[in-house]
Image (tube, rainbow, N blue to C red; front, side):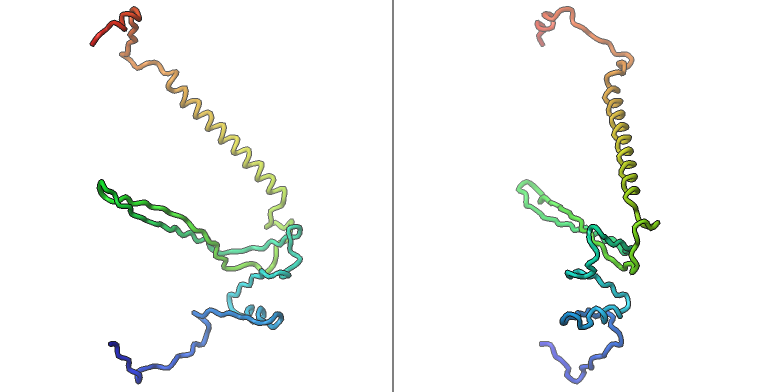
Length: 177
């Protein structure tokens, strides 16, 4: 049985900051939860409730700069199936999870027509350039396939090869081993 020394218990030490703590603020609307949360260092506030920034829509989008990391995690599952004829069969399945960890966002939105924002013409030009590139890639692939197919048909037989033709088709049929 484990023994506990009740006289060696140390009192709880109160930390002077909030490092290592998760904080949940809840309360009625308009009580200052967002105002308090915005005072924390490195605070990132994302509004998902209805009515938040109501002037943003598909027809009036807001663009801003966001930065962070893309984290890819590969999960591998191994299952062994017993086999009557030897070692067990190992089946391996993998899947990759991708997460976007946003570390920050610019407070100032980018305006349409700004140098840092793509215009509709830029997108159309990029799309056309991509299509032209794909046509070139397809043409190169087709030319490669044709040259590969013709490589076996156009080559003369290697030196020293002779073609043997039978004198008559019946002579070849009557031959016995």
